[in-house]
Amino acid sequence: MKASDICRRLHVLGDREKAQVLQRFFKTAQGEYGEGDIFVGLRVPEIRKLAKEYQLLTLSEIIQLLQSPIHEARLLALIILVRAYTRGDDSIQNKIYNLYIDNIRFINNWDLVDASAEHIVGSYLRYRSRSPLHSLAVSSLLWDRRISIMATFHYIKSGEFAETLRIAELLIRDREDLIHKAVGWMLREIGKRDHLAEEEFLRAHYKTMPRTMLRYAIEKFPEKLRQQYLRGEL
Image 1 (cartoon, rainbow, N blue to C red):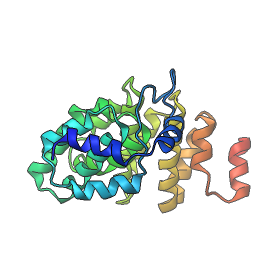
Image 2: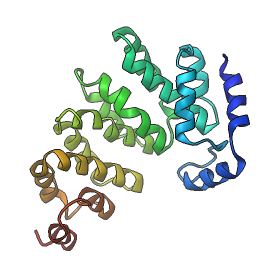
Image 3: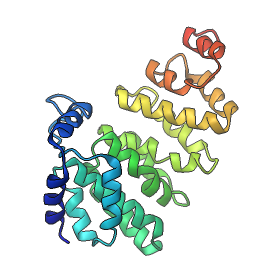
C-alpha cells in the first residue's frame, strides 16, 4: 500500500463536520499555533486501528505520510513508528529515531508530540547523551521545545526525575501556553510518584513560573496547600 492510497482512504473515512470541529480545536486559523493544518475528521481510536492495519508499511512510505499536509496522516505515521520502534531491534530503533529527528518539522502540533516524543526520543536517549533534549529545549520552535519536555515522560515512568527537572528549568520562562501546560503536567507526574521531589522544585520556582504551569503542577495537591502556592504563602 502506498502513502498516497492511504491518504485517499483517510479522506473517504473522514467526517466533514468532525473535521471542522478539529480545525477549531487544534487552532488552525491564521495566526494560531496550528495555522494551515488540514483535518479530514478521524478520531484517535480510528487512527490507532488503521496503524495496526498498516504496521508493515515501509519506512519510505511512512515518511511520505509524515510529510503529508493531512494531520491525521501525520498522526498515523507517528503511531506506526511508535509501534515499530517498540518492537524493533537496535538497528530499527536507530533508523526510526533519526527519521523522527530528520522530519521533526512535521511533528507540529501538541497531539503529534504527545503521542510520540516519550516513546521514540525519550526511549532512544535513555542510555545515551541527553544533549539533544537540551538543544530542543532552547529551540525557537514551539514544538521542538514541547518534544524536549514530553520526551522525559519516558524517564518519569521509570522513576527518574532529574532530566525532567533540568528541562523544566530551561523552560521555566517560556512564553508559550502549550509549554506551560506540558511542563506543569510533567511536574504533576513527578509528584504522583515522589511528592517531595516535585515540591522541592516548586518551592524554588513557584513564585516566578508562569501561572498556568503552576496550576497544572499543583492540580492534585490538597486544597489548603494548593491555595498556599497560589497565594505565594510558602
